[in-house]
Length: 346
Image (cartoon, rainbow, N blue to C red; front, side, top):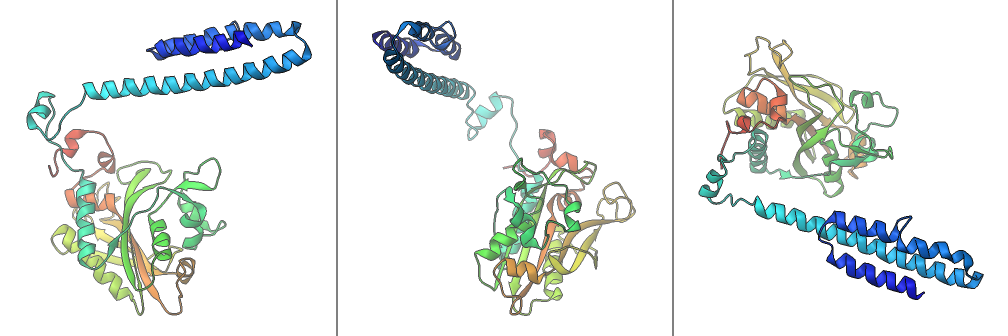
């Protein structure tokens, strides 16, 4: 008992003197390893009486647990100190131009997605919409079931989903999950938009990425019509592009709207002649939309016999590409600062 107490006391003293993680690990091995001081004591317990073995075993386990906890705490402290020291050495005061220039850095700028997203938010705010947010990690109900997409629905095959190991949670495949959360916390009439990142296991090309940006929108009230939907969409596009743009509305299937539409915009990269962005058809699929399905309203706690509404999901990255003439979506998600430097600066 005295030996165990002495080992613990010496361990605490030696640990306090350690200034590196490697020193801590070496000390742990010297005391708690197979050939360590504590292990040597435990080996000698074979000569003790049953009662002594019981007492010594409990005391040794208590000491071992305390030492392991002290080691973990010490390592966390040393690692935090190392990180803070590194950050302090590389600290740059970006509010001082001289400090930035000394490091060879250039003036910062906003990403084009951020620029366009902020403009869209301002446009919708001016039309009486709220701006909502939602989590990237969702459950099956918010991402599928509440949007009229049950487990057996073929629409699930249209969205290659990143599932977590528990098979209950996933990276959201669309910002439509914000619709569900928005309906649950509001009473009609209401209108809101929800921008954010979404994730799908897709093959990347000039117009597709695995991680991309959408902007969801919804308006619910009494006697809402397709005419309301078209008005808000045309207003949005004319404000973004600072001119009237040619659009077309064609039938489309989406489980969460009925009737559903695809709103396409004439490709502003090639002027409708055909390019890699528009897949050589002259039109870019930009804005799936439609009248909210009654089942979705019910899932949101809204009476579909009294209220109706429209919803849309805007491809924010594609809108950015049309706005700035970007011919490859992968440029938007790259890490080349020269790309960002072409756009708005602080």
